[in-house]
Image (cartoon, rainbow, N blue to C red; front, side, top):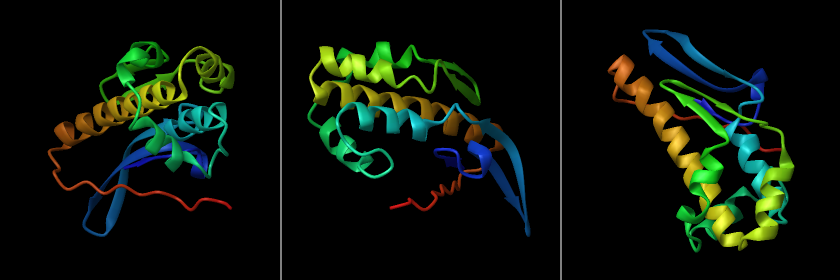
Length: 143
């Protein structure tokens, strides 16, 4: 499984390895990217996107995700095995939230929303395929 920005033109995919072959069973089209979703909040909170996402993860640990979780999750259309992000490239949404709420709570809501959406996505394909060994991959960050 990959869930990233937009490497190889995709925002994510689910593949099954059988023997010496790998077969893609689902792909997430850009711009419905959890990577760019997280980049937007990174930028909105005053950090460098594609470089400081780890700082947002750390910041999120101090916030209350429940304050904005429903608001942030409302940006997603989820169905079993798929999701879409409404206005996925709208950076102004997270910037607006950052003007109204403490940065720690915005970070916490974005982190929890990412966890909820990613977990739902992964759970669906684990249940559908019956495969219990899952590999996650990430690409290289540009510095």
